[in-house]
Image 1 (cartoon, one colour):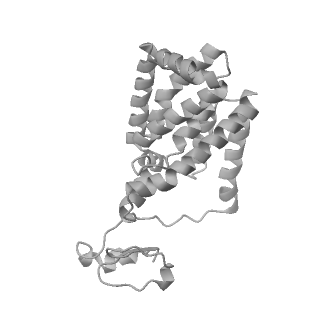
Image 2: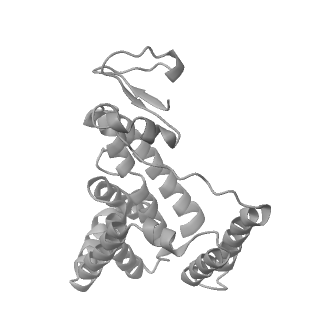
Image 3: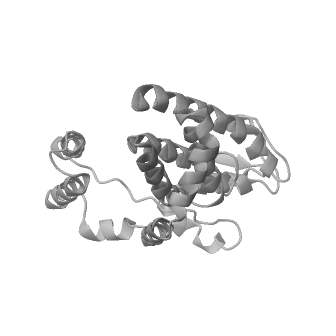
Length: 255
């Protein structure tokens, strides 16, 4: 038994101390023969969340090889010996050749819906840049937040990106704000990396709404949370993230 949801009530007890009653929902980790043994009861009592394949036993070389290859990829890409794209292709090819992963397994695990979403987001980003909207927003940000200097602009970029990521996906938020950050960097003649780091972290700090990220939405329904629960915890956490991010970016990247 992995988790328990009490019927119409919340429970803060440890799993081993919970007394089960009618209507409780259990999350179970079971063996493969469970499905065959209880197949006649699935429509009434059980629902399959996911089926986990039994791990394949590998020798010592096959266990160490992926770690070594991944470290090599990171080192080569970090020192600009090869691009990250080429490094990823080399790693994937080496895994296929050594039979660590199978081509059909790779295709099965690719989430094409996510790829399509990212591709569409890039289209939105290009449209924002080509229509001049990015430059227009950059001008307003520099005008109103620029009175506080670069710190004010960093706070404004972080805040806008964070609001967007709470309403749409983090990938879409980055794509929308990326051309705006580039436009600001060109206008102020500042390294664009300053703004890219800021908006990337802001897009990943989705704590204040249940719709901001998939995991938020999962626990929202199962834990019977309310919007105010996310706001109560998420807003202070987002503020802390913003302060730390802006401070580090200003002191160690901008300076």
